[in-house]
Image 1 (cartoon, rainbow, N blue to C red):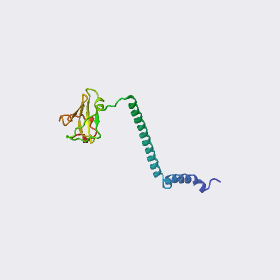
Image 2 (image 1 turned 135 degrees about the vertical axis):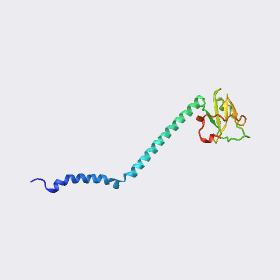
Image 3 (image 1 turned 45 degrees about the vertical axis):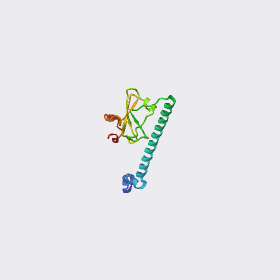
Image 4 (image 1 turned 90 degrees about the vertical axis):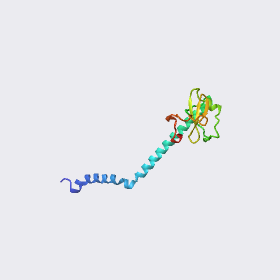
Length: 149
């Protein structure tokens, strides 16, 4: 005699039971919170590694500039210890003025990112001495909307 009725339906029943367990497994395993925590930890670790390498690169750069004596020059100079005041015009150190080439225009900003003047031909021109000094600043120089007055 052949298979009886229970043996005949046993394989389809086991396959459907396995599918049901797979579908219901998130209810028992709660993987959603673990996956989210894992992703957050992974992103945090990558961010920390990126910051660490950036700090190492900055350290190498500053060490090299100290060893060689070269000064880095940028199209802007920010005076962190000065807020714009017509009675108190900043005096720039000779080293700040000498770091730029003779024909180079450098915009000088105060601590609140407002234009204070310009360095031209290694001389500082305050906006309080010449009212047109801070007028034609290129858009690429603006670091924030606060610069425009």
